[in-house]
Length: 219
Image (tube, rainbow, N blue to C red):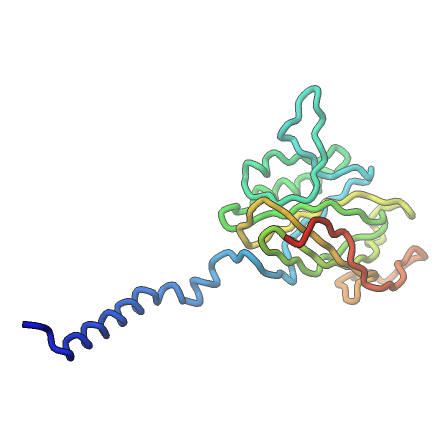
């Protein structure tokens, strides 16, 4: 005997309810928030800023280094695995403290859920950078910063520039390919946690925000 119209409508309704029940876990806000995001912004990013007083690169690429080949300097890069992190070398001119910070930072990164963005930078010897935010999406990373004087107990030389390496820990799993990076900054910092009150004649004068350090295409 052919099924009645009521029976067909009832079975269809049960099918819809079953489909919705099967998909309920996919829309769980907690599950979504726990997943690494492929794009986003951190206003207080996890970052280390080792410096090399000699002005030479802070990080070197040890993947092809041998007795005849010196390690090449590291440019802008997304570090996506522990194996790649192990290939990054810290230059000899970097302090032992900064050397240890870099190694610990790379070793403590969970590359199953995180990516490290590495970018070279430069700064006056008596200044330091405060990173205000970092934004990312596939193939693209940008950050914002301000600069301020270092504390008086930090040794520095006026009118000398030093090399920095900025290592950001991004809470996202990104492909290693980079097509565009950027940085924008201002000086001095508008707000600061600096506790010292004495600022000498080398103080940074206020300036306009300037977008710098952009390369690649918009792809």
